[in-house]
Amino acid sequence: MLQLLGSLLILLTTVIYRLWIHDLRRFPGPKLAAVSRIPYLWQGYNGNLVAWVSQQHERYGEIVRIAPYELSFTKPEGWDEIYGHATRGRKQTQKDLRFHNDKTMGVVRDIVRANDVDHARYRRNFSHAFSERALNAQNPLIMKYVDLLIFKLKKIALSPDPRVDIVRWYNFTSFDIMSDLTFGDPLGLLESEEYDEFVVLMFASVKAEMMQMVSRYLKWLKPIAKMLITQEAIEKRKNHYDFLRRSVDKRLARHNPRPDIWGLVIEATGEKKMNLEEMYANSKSIMLGGTETSATSLSGITYLLLTNPVAYKTLVEEVRSTFPSEQDITSTKLQQMPYLNACVEEALRMYPPVPGGLPRIVPPEGRAVCGEWIPGDVVVSVHQYSTYRNPKNFKDPNSFRPERWLKDPDFAADRRDALQPFSTGPRNCVGMK
Image (cartoon, rainbow, N blue to C red; front, side, top):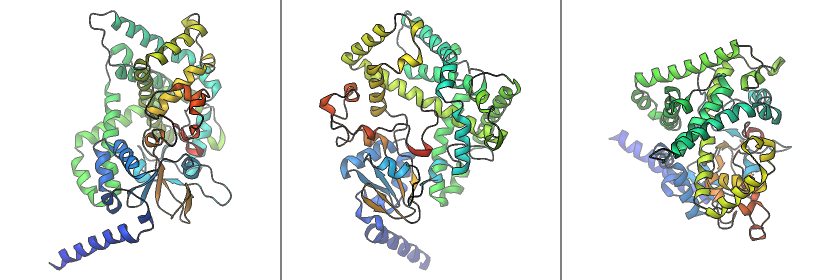
């Protein structure tokens, strides 16, 4: 009885402290979320976190308390103040490894989870593989799979049933391209027209990661989470990592001066050089970061163009007036097409490949963010989807309007600096080009 009363007293004290005494009490948000992280984790586990946070911003405004010690922002100033470089008098924020996971696989951290020193070293390595020069050298390899995709889609269009799941085909293409760039061989998805075990396991691992994330936030759930993870799941995870190791080993054994990712990375010398375990750990991040996100963006822009015939017609006219034939298309010329690039920017605004927030921890001394003083150790983030649909940032935010990126006076008040789909600062996406 005394234990029960003691537990109730602790619970009541926690509720009172978080609602009426804690430094974050002045920020609006759901009361239950202010008391417990369970609403946040429940929405994440069910795949509704982005929509849930967006709903809170619509109801409560540009700064919302989404967990007892976490704030979500939709103001453009938040990008630099949360994710920006360290300056005199301002330390760099650190990633919340409860959200990102401490290690992806193996014994070392990949570029997503590395400390600042290792992260900078990884970036110097990968800068060779994601430079403009590398992209131009990789263009023939990429176009090989683009041509195969077009061939397959034309074949379907001429079949008795011309319906197509375009998301699936974009995934086939992006995985084949990234597999070739990462391991020197495609997965063969475009040829087989099916997902292979590697991709199925990768998608499954993303879902399983949510359960593990719950246990990282709520330590008392860790034993239960371990019980729910079957031996089969553990074996699949091991097989997945073994495949990555074998694929990296196979690519390195070729000693082939090919302009793929590892071919360019191994040119690095001295202290910058990555060891084998680091290559293994980073191979999954490269595959995940360059595949599903690309397919999501392509699916978004395809949907938006097909549902906006005026924009579609304008883009078709620009493409056909620029390129007499398919053979004339180059990445350099594509970057010089204003309406095409406006469509891409607008699609990234409406359907960002990473729609949620990327949590950062405020340094112990505290930090001013968007005009508010935030105490140390509080988790903060800019929620991309909500930021891009905020009418204070973009006029007519729920409509596909590429002209907003072409200096149209109707959109002169738009906060174009609010759009950062690849994040900003020292930890922005290394492969954003």
